[in-house]
View: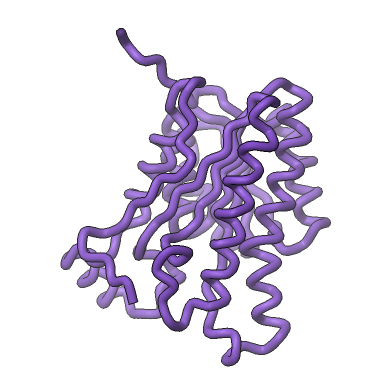
Length: 246
């Protein structure tokens, strides 16, 4: 018996952090599939570059916004209501790297938490409210294997991603009767701007299969979103073949 897959064509998708890295690669995939996408990021220049890369390939909108600010989240979802007429899927990618907590100013580590964790929760709440009214939807959060490996130097970052993981797995049970699916993709090391190494070092790491390209994660996101209505990919862990674990 053939398994029916969910088609992304025409789906109304809000994508956070779609201007760089995994988010930008995901934007390209979603637009190529015919989804109607609203994305946002903190920097207008990066936003313009991301939109230019998919120009003419589909219906896509972009606005500047900071996911750590509630006013910006409100503006994003108001724009989704106006431009898309609602939301079928939320893909939350916006995140920042961090140093060990004792090496960061208080304002800096708090900003990371507001972006990586509180921003995800705020977007989820706004999305769930809309999805509940329309009869269903799908939330997908980009997490990290840092929640499992707990590498030195990642205390703040790991805390935020562990929070996302626990939130998603619990929220899934809370909204199951609302026909809302909740998924997490957990990438390992990925060639993005978050990496604290040179472009040449990243290319070499990819060649050694110690780092993935962002397109690999975008492909995993596509897989999760296109499963049948009966299937919920709760967690999908994807990492390079030679992932460093400490």
